[in-house]
Image 1: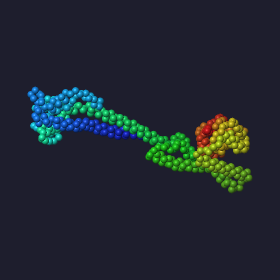
Image 2: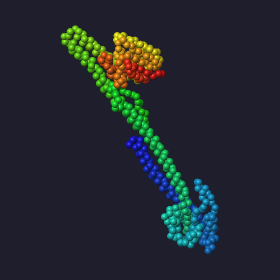
Image 3: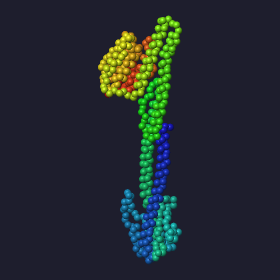
Length: 488
């Protein structure tokens, strides 16, 4: 399972469990909370009405006559209350009925007055609201009118009626809970919808955090892949300089610390691999001339004919010169690899650099019977003239080595591109991709491998410092190498 999926799964699991329990608590608390508020208001109402009914109870006017009437002003007011027209808008709900039922009992629990005339004369002494109030306690109860139907419940709250500081009766206020059920339902819907919205927003935040985390982790992964070396099947020059193609990703927190630790580890590993590859390649390249010099030296210690002695002495000189060329070019390449960019300031004309390179190689070309030709004018740019000339000189030396005697090596200028064209045998197709690797050489037309394999490596490094590229392809006959500089 991928990291992003795991993070999302874990986030949704935690968020879902938390949302479930939180919503469950809120939903479970709405109904009792509303009923608690309702009971609090009924307590106030019952006590106010009990005070209003005390005078009529003391005067004995609350009892209902045979014609179901009463001379009690309190009873008359309550009955008029029950028939009052009402149309109130309460937070979006319309209230069109008055729902209080009010009844009064004496000290024995007998009902003296009932606003709905349902229980006059009944014995309510066993009901909790009446019994507890008569004992001087807080009396309240909730009774279902239909057994098993929670919506049919009726809340009863009682208050004592005092006459001369003595409890002379009980006034009870009753209200069906269904009258507030719509408020409970709406509150539950709002809480539920708010919970869903919160869950959706939390999910969006979780997705955003996960995507951010996965994006940064993938940046670290790409960075690690970019510095681990070439993929399987790709060729890698062990002596190539450390690459810096991909910068250390800027990520915050612990991921940033990990990125910097990876960069330090990469630098150490690349430095070690670079040195090891460099030493192996250099040892391999120096082995042949050193062996030739040693062999010739051992033979020169014996008595030899003059012609053989001259031949072996010449071989010692030639191999020493080859060693010197390798050392000189290694020093040049080492200097270039310590730099990160070219230092061109004033505009440099490519034609001037080409003419300087031709002047430096003309004597060697003439010695081999090769003509150097310059075509085109090229452009000018903020390049480093010394490095451009160095790259062209190495290209011309390489072309002179491969060009047949009596042929022409052409230097062609076209805008910011310089091309060196020879008419030699070219390079095998498999070797084109490896041109520019340090110490990589191909056989000369005569079959010898006298090159150091560093000339084109120097050219590659010069182009990298200028932000350009080297492109080589066979032209049958010959090899064409183009240096494409980045224009200003």
